[in-house]
Length: 119
Image 1 (cartoon, helix red, strand yellow):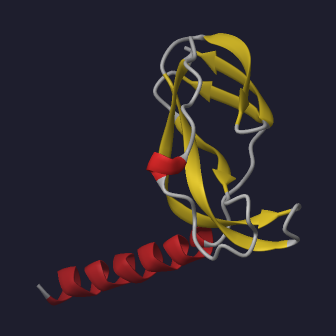
Image 2 (spheres, one colour):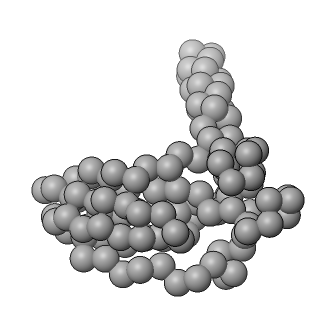
């Protein structure tokens, strides 16, 4: 019982540590290469107003394009470096889920993405 408690505590610390390291840095991935069943964060979407102070709500974002290789979904909230705002800003996370093999290019909220999905 004692050993199990120690092991659980170690995994909790490791888990929280890795979460906090990822929480402040939503990546921008313009060249996506995945296998069917995998998913990746494409980008973060910020408010047009850099001083807004919070990420846009999912309901406020325009519709996402439909793809033949998978689906794009709006996710949770994170932070990303914004070249336009010249600061780290709150963003809404945009994820791609690979569903079918193929290649395509798509524009999502002003950014171009090249997507390749393999079996």
